[in-house]
Length: 138
Image (cartoon, rainbow, N blue to C red; front, side, top):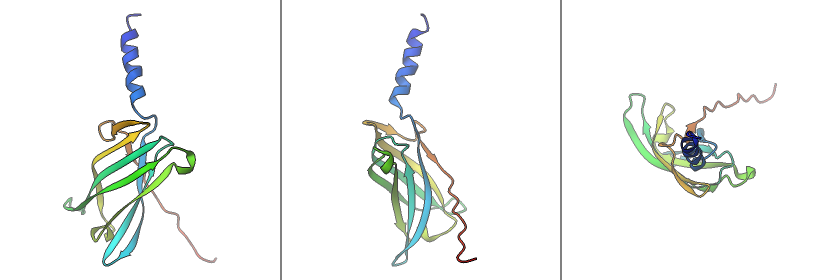
């Protein structure tokens, strides 16, 4: 029984973290007018009740120079499988470029009632998105 305190500490720590990482990916970019584009980012909560998701991002060019920054925000999602996914938008002139690098500077959320620093807990991960090729006709 001398391992019981260590086992309890590990169990308690695991209960404090979400069971599933929040995944996100760049899913689309559309022309928003007035010289701006809107980049769409999709988030997957894994059906973890997620509130007040805030992901601060920097937009970098190929050389690593910071062009812009912004915050992706989702108020609430993930309570049910029907709302497991949510979209957030980032609009600017810079988002029209096809070769941007997005870096996450800060990310927080309330998951299952607990405030979580998603970077510190490594609970935010990226998913590589590859769109289908679409052909019209034969």
